[in-house]
Length: 196
Image (cartoon, rainbow, N blue to C red; front, top):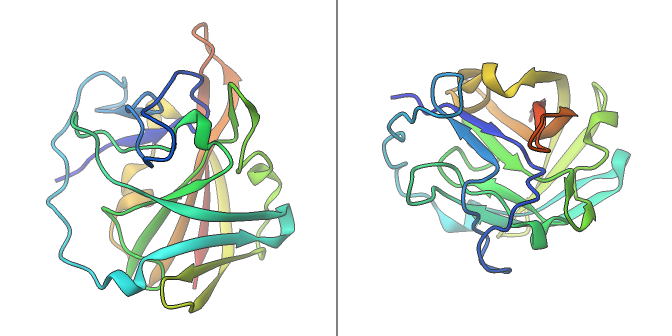
């Protein structure tokens, strides 16, 4: 089953309580391109070795060094995002692969919140060949190399490319981008693709 997920990463609306690692879904559009219709969530992922869970991400080229929140699904089946109060902290979507496992691991972060610039504020400056290092709970560092970046309309979010299965360990970094709509929300997403 597919779950269409577009991340604003810049919501200025309040999320859940600070420190919980969960949002209210205000930064996520789900459905068939309109952001309104909702599709079923994917089946629950198989049990994972918690020691392989990522706990930190660093991107030297843009001076990012962040602990990682655990992000799952909200009660309405949208993907959690860090709250605005957690704007300087990125989060790993636990419904996908853990970094280093076969599949796409997804890390989501704001580039701006009502409190100002956030953890992925300079993600658009990241170019092909840049390094992204993720440390797991065992202290093992996994270094990914950026292979591509793209900016897409939230109404045309490439769900399969971002969250779909891959034959090798891959990483996705997702935030918001582009101009603002009438409600003050960015209309695009910026996606960075990287391989181990």
